Amino acid sequence: QVQLVESGGGLVQAGGSLRVSCAASGRTLGSYYFMGWFRQAPGKEREFVAAISWNTGNTYYADSVKGRFTIARDSAKRMVYLQMNSLKPEDTAVYYCTADQSLNRLRAGGPDYWGRGTQVTVSS
Image 1 (tube, rainbow, N blue to C red):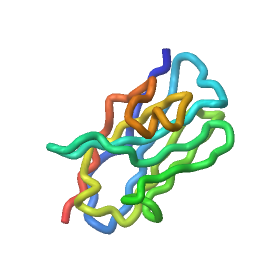
Image 2: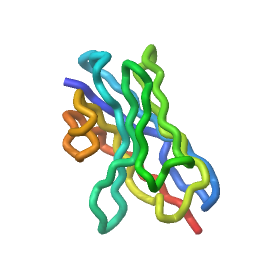
Image 3: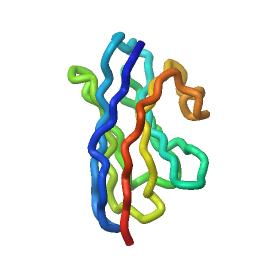
Image 4: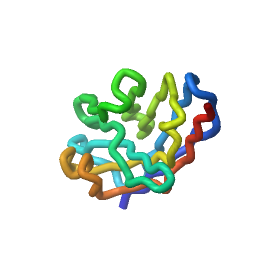
């Protein structure tokens, strides 16, 4: 089993920045894994935000965050980060860390592993 634990959420003003982190522990993820972030706002469905290949470092983003958010990984520390800049009130959500062997399955919302989430609130 793999455990994913998010941290770094909080309250920030619109236009500000915040970085959330995800620590992976337990069974070692293979290099073919993808790590990603989802978010869920109150009353809305969970949506894909970003993903990164553990092996190549290739990144993938939702159109709504492209150019504002950056996903990165530190393989040695088994950490994944989501740097969020130019935050908007509509970015307010619980942010979840995910992991899966399939990028398509991850993006579709069905990854093997989920964290418990961290709250990000952007005030206007």
